[in-house]
Structures are given as structure tokens and as C-alpha cells.
Length: 328
Image 1 (cartoon, rainbow, N blue to C red):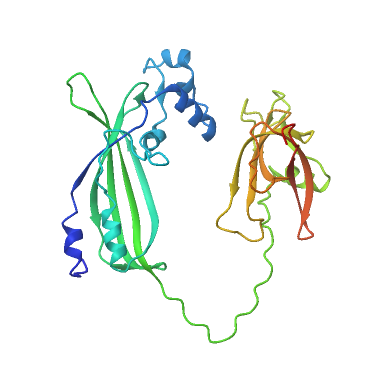
Image 2: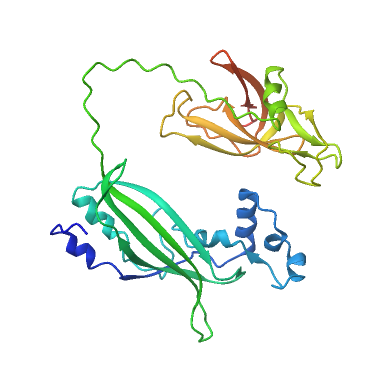
């Protein structure tokens, strides 16, 4: 390792275990259902109690990939759940920053699971500063790879030892950004940025080509008469290859949305409102929103209507205009 005088403080922290960070809530059906809906997970073992009762587990279980989410910090003043430690396992990053390594980028995160977690369990994790690399130079700059290991436990209340249920390895690089070479000639004016074109394949060509015809085409299964989006080579419901499309009405309602304020990505508007639209036909589609007033958030469930706009003289895309509510 690089032997800076200040590095001895960091070396002394390696292997140190930091106290518990508790989950705000016990594992519960409502949060599992919401997570599965958002992530598009349809495994009945997580959401169908009658089905789960027939399995080897005998009850609902939580998706393993939810493990980290149970113990995430909250917002506002009450960041950590009651009983959590006030120790800061990220203090090593503060030391590196103070000594000239201000930038940070997450490198990788690996989760391992010992077993399924069941409803009603109370979880917490502890953190160990696992390792710090030698000083390394990458394309980003020069710095140190810092590896933390979080171990997750299920707390027992009957006198038994708490049970380990999983681990997470989290690695970042804390670095000095690489110096860019000075320009010796005036920089050329960058060409105007165009909207990125979609990746078109034989499976989704009908969808993208429909916009030029002012049509919102949704994939339809001839065998089971169900719609699906995004387009796929087979029906996600019955696995049939017999597929065509139906033209949607273009009407729907706002199922969810996000307004991107930063960073500003050319050539998109800033702020950039993006909605998840639930069409009258029952499928959901992401698209840009128009008619969003500055400082006025759209309303979930608000009616929308598709419009077609051509960008850069060559790319026609659907955007959905918010239908004003009675309150507005």
C-alpha cells in the first residue's frame, strides 16, 4: 500500500465492525407486493398466500433481491431506524477526501442469500471495512478501491442467537480525477445533439414504424388474445409465436412519473418529465409527458392523450399530453 503518513489511520480501520443498522419495518406483505409490482416480478411465491401454502415453504416469502431494501435509510431528520448505531462506516471515505481524493464512483455490489426471508422477521445489518487497495491509476484517475461488507441478520426474540440471512459486498473507488490535457487549438463547435434512435429489431419494428403512421401499435397474441408491451418474440402469457399487433386508442392515465432535473442531457428538455402510461387497453408504456406546468406536479391517475412529434426531421415518437383536471 502507498505509505502516506495519514494512511495509518485508514489501515487501523480495516477489519473494524460497525454496529447495527435496523430495518424501519418488519418484513411484510404490502412492501413485498409493491416491490414485485414495480420490478415486474410475478412469482406467486411472493404474493399469493394460497399458492405459497402449497410449497415447501408453507407461507409467503420475500424476494431475495429485496434484502438490501429492508434496511435502507429514510428521508428527512429520521434517517436511521430506532436502535441503529450512530457510527459511520463510511468514515474512511471522508479521510480520503480530506487528503485529496474527492471523487467517488460505485464499482460493484454483490449480494448473497442464505435463505428466504419470511413475513414478520425483523432485519438488521452490520458493516465491516473489508479492505482498501493499493493506490491505483485508472482511466478515471488515481485513487483507492474501498470494499465494505454488510452482513444481514434476522433478529430473534426468544433467546436464540440472531440468524445470518445474507451478505452484501459493496466496492467504490475514491480518486483524484485524471487531468485533461490542455487544448492547443480552439475547440470546434460541437454539432447539435440529436435524439438517440431506438434499437429496432424484427420483433419491435412494427411498434416503431407505427409512429410514422400516427399509430400506437401494441403487440397482440393471436393464440390467447392478450396484449403485451414491450414487444417480444413470444407471448409472455402463453408462449405462443403467433403474434400480430393492435392499434391502441392512445388514451390512458398516468400510472407513475418522474421529472428529471439534473443532469441536463441534451437534446432533452430540462426539466424532463417522463411518465409510465397505463393505456385503456391495459398495458403500460413509458413516454415523455407534455403539458406539465413548471412547479405543478402531475397527478397519478390523471388522464392523458397521445400526440406524435417529429424530432430532428427524421424521428417520430409518441408523447402524452396531460388532460387538465377539474381542479386545474
